[in-house]
Length: 184
Image (cartoon, rainbow, N blue to C red; front, side, top):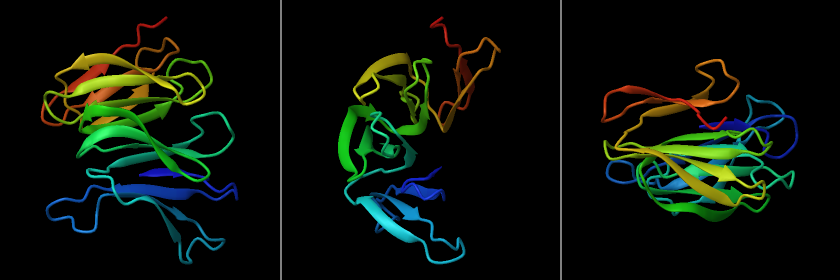
């Protein structure tokens, strides 16, 4: 689930994905809900796409530097990483080959002032990768590791050296792994 002010009214919206598939009829979508003036009132659903097999994570942020909110999304129970470009939320593929990117990060990972992405597959054969953003949402994939599954992934400065490292809670791999950022 992602949370952020999508429409610029000062109130946060909530975004989510539904993976669909067996036992999850009506799924395979990404959407966000617009918060009304009275938060206890009815929230309006905005469907971003209803053709997203394995939809899981979605996070709001300005990916292309145009001062419009976009969404970064992953098909953690399917294949692929994509973004929805605001304000019309057109779907654009980032990585059509990453399998099961169950964990998703949207942070300035390289300290250059724009939002980068990171993901990790959920199976034992998963790929750990970060996607360097050039500030205009052109992403360069950097593979960090292979054969690491993920249930959850965080970007945090584990060693106090001022940069963000990755901490992964393994899914099928049943481990916890710290990937130290050695970029500096």
